Length: 429
Ligand SMILES: O=C(O)C1=C[C@@H](OP(=O)(O)O)[C@@H](O)[C@H](O)C1
Ligand SMILES: C=C(OP(=O)(O)O)C(=O)O
Image (cartoon, rainbow, N blue to C red; front, side, top):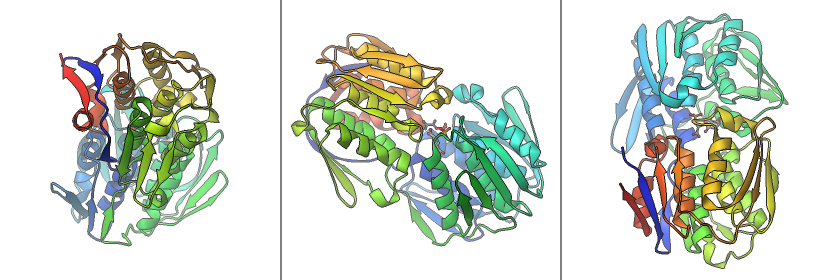
C-alpha cells in the first residue's frame, strides 16, 4: 500500500476536535442494540472497530446507520444463524462471544489480522463453566446460544478486562445472573467501570465489592435516555497533546469532557501535568501550552490501568532530562501488536534510550536533547503504534518512513488528514 514519508511540521497553532471515544461508541452501540426502546447515538467514532460492532449487532437488532447518527433497538425477529466478521476489534469479539452465548441460535465470530492471535481461551473457559456452548476451530469462535442459568465464575484479571465486560453484558440475559470474581492482578480496571456505567444507562445494575461483581439475571436493557452523545477520546487526543509538546505549539482540543472520561484514558492528562506539561482544563476542552512547556521531569508510574496511553506518554518522555520508568504494562503484549516491542522500536528510531522487560511489563526511557529520525518504522498495522510513529516523526530532525500504517483506520481514519490541516508535511510513496 505504500509508505508514509513524514517530512516534518511547520508549526501552526490551532483548534482541533478530539475524535469520539472508541470504547464508549462500542459500549453504547451494543447496549442500544439490546435495548427494548429505540436509542439514537450521535458523534460516534467511525473507525473500523465501530463497523465491526455494527456488523456484530445486526442479526439481533433493528438498526439504521446514517451519516451522523445510528438509531437502533433490539430486533423482534432474531436471526438464528449468524456469521459475523469482527475485523480486528478485540472488544467486539470478546463481548459478543459473551452476549451470543445467552441468545438462542448459532453464531460464528470471525476475527481478522492481528486479532487472530490474541488471547480468548480464559473467556471461553469461564463461559463453559457457566454452561455456555462455545468452542473454536482455529481462530473462528462458534457459539451455540441459549438462555443460561448463570452462576458464579472466577476469571483472571491479568490478560484483558474485556473478558469481564463480556460476562457483564451477558449477565442480564441469563436467568439467575452472574457473580464474577476477578483474580488479581486486575489490568485495565477502569474499562470495567466504563462497562458498568454504560450498563447503568440502560437500566442494568451491577453490584461491586473489591474484586467481585454481581449482575442479576432476567433484566431487560432499557435505555434511560432516547439519545446518547459520545464524548471525545482522551487516549486519542493524547497524540495531539504530544504533538503540541514536541513541536512547541499551543493547541486547543475541543470535545473533551472530564466528567464523561474513562479514567484509564483521562490519566494521560494527569501524568502529563505531573511531568511538567502546561495544560489548562475547561468544561468541554483542554488548552495545551506547548510553547511554554520547557523542561520536563522524569516519571515513575504504574500504568496497569491505562495500557492505551503508554504510546503517547512514551513520546513525552523522550523530552525528559533523565530516566523514566513505566511499570505494570505486561498486558501490552496482547494488543494489535506486541506494543512493548513496538514502543521500543519507535523510540530507538527517534533517538531516545529505551529498555524493555517483557516478562515484568516494564519500560525504561532515557530522554534525548534532539529527536533524530532518519529511519524507518514498521508500525505493524497497529493504530496506536502508527500514531506514535507519525507524531514522533513530525518533531524529528530528519524524515522518517513508516510502513504498515493503514491500520490507523481502526480508531482514527482521518488521522493523517487531520495532521496535514495543522501543518504536517506527510507524503505517500
Ligand atoms: O474495554 C475496552 O474498550 C478496552 C480495554 C483495554 O483492553 P484490555 O482490557 O484488553 O487491556 C484497552 O486496551 C482497549 O483498547 C479498549
Ligand atoms: C487494544 C485495543 O482495542 P481492542 O482490544 O478492542 O482491539 C486498542 O484500541 O488499542
